[in-house]
Length: 358
Image (cartoon, rainbow, N blue to C red):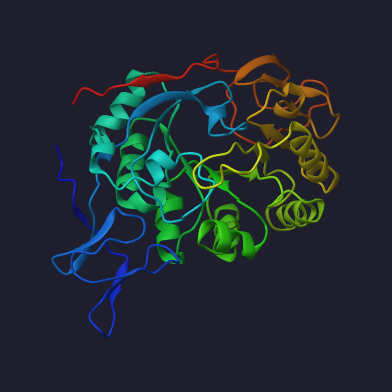
């Protein structure tokens, strides 16, 4: 098995002898032995190293719609994995058992990049997803896995908050084929109080992906009652997306459930998601979706030309398919943006935990 502790390059030495990590805007400054807030990058032997290379909290074959990505080979399966730690500190984290972990025992599985690529092929997965916790913090591993996957025709999907500095942003996202960015809110106050971060770096990441890479882009916003679900904020967010990313970037609005350090906040009503979807569409977003609730209308894809349904979804199950082999609406011929096969995939709503035999 490959070494799990590897050197990194995004850091520099401060005048007082501390090493500053330049991977993300947190810019943790470390003395020997200290770890960054992300937990997985540590100063060892006078350099900053990634200490979880090749380690995972587990592997699972999921529907691609679960990431969520609705315009990237719909109905296909994706081999998903994550590690431990995160570079944000979201009080509402829905994967806190992994993202907040400080126990190496969480990383029970291991695999080289080549083995992961082989596994994706073995399990019939169209793509591999770096998810559960933010893959930015294990950039070196994710980029190597993406290269190994590309050699075998497997696509790479990043599910990320997009909280990353400019130089590593280039390396990371140039390696990806599709990205779902967690746009957590549209105020810096929310990012600061509830995530320990800032909004602007995320917006810069979104613009970079859209303008400078070939990666397919979608966004997700977890709507938390009383915190980021006002009409005013939703109008501002969706107008910004249309102006800066264009009308064809799909937006997902997902339901919050009480977790981690926000157990006193109620779950998101389905009506809030429907309202957010309507605001987005009224502001020119062509593809707005609801998530974490049973809503076939809000989960389905509609042609922006004739408004006919072109992909029916019931949770993660696909139904009626109204696209031709080239991804155009069979009713009016409007091209639907995204990456589509000649027909829908049939993986459905299964979730299959797997073990990799090294």
